[in-house]
Image (cartoon, rainbow, N blue to C red):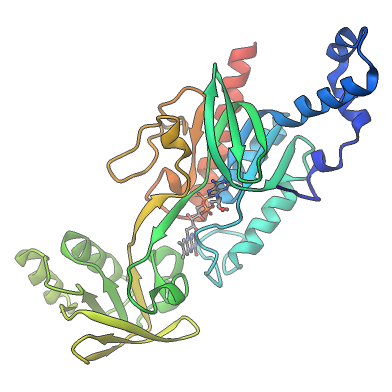
Length: 344
Ligand SMILES: Cc1cc2nc3c(=O)[nH]c(=O)nc-3n(C[C@H](O)[C@H](O)[C@H](O)COP(=O)(O)OP(=O)(O)OC[C@H]3O[C@@H](n4cnc5c(N)ncnc54)[C@H](O)[C@@H]3O)c2cc1C
């Protein structure tokens, strides 16, 4: 486990931990050697939180901002692998348009960790269990933490198609979302790696940004005849040849090379890869999932398990930094409200 140097708990002295114990400390010290009590109390204080947030990217940091400002002792556990890490520039977030994703997260982290109620550790949450109404989380580095509430903001892991070149181009010229990167490739030669109804829906959508559009079904097309006719009517090509690899330079697409040696020049390609949840802890705790594989939440980001909330990509197909921030802020406020309701 790495305690962030910015993090206040990392800097907190023994004296201030004892001071925080207040009356409880005074009541329980009778007859106990002071030094050994201080040690035990430190452990308890250090490992117990109002809220544990698993995933410290946009959704998690946004929730932590609301919770920290609500005076909630909050722990963020983050393994440092946000889904957009390969994208050179993030778009479609006002005030931060065109800024590298890591820079946006760094600004957020700097602002959140100014609140002495919030602690950030670089670690991976491995398991969690419910003990009564509380949660205990165990991490890869062997730490254990407890909290009244838990928030999942660990995002999703894209399962990229096994085509040589896709991984290198992901987030650079193989893209998932026209709102994030479509403008940069507007009116350019663009592919869509999809088949069936998804190919039709994406073809229709992306035709807003470019008229040089080819759907790559990578094998026999399963697009319905009526949909195929409509795509063709709008000048969208459909290529069924199987793809061998993508030719690119530093992630910038040049050509699609097909198994039959045919080639297609393109500058960008849209893909909607399958995904899995980044952590299986929500499953361990018996959270329900949607048919698409997102954690099921209500309008207040509450999961189907009492005391557990979720926000960001793990809960929504609307993948964007702004959406993650918004959902995180909602989750933070709703968790705080629940804690107030329980304790008032
Ligand atoms: C390639 C690409 C490019 C994109 N470009 C844009 C763009 O230009 N504009 C835009 O608005 N959106 C963009 N998006 C979407 C945007 O990145 C996501 O919607 C957003 O990152 C979701 O935020 P999140 O906090 O839910 O998850 P993430 O940002 O993915 O963060 C999840 C965090 O949880 C951590 N984590 C996972 N498991 C654990 C665990 N067990 N323990 C501890 N920590 C854990 C991860 O390491 C990570 O730091 C892009 C997405 C992709 C994939």
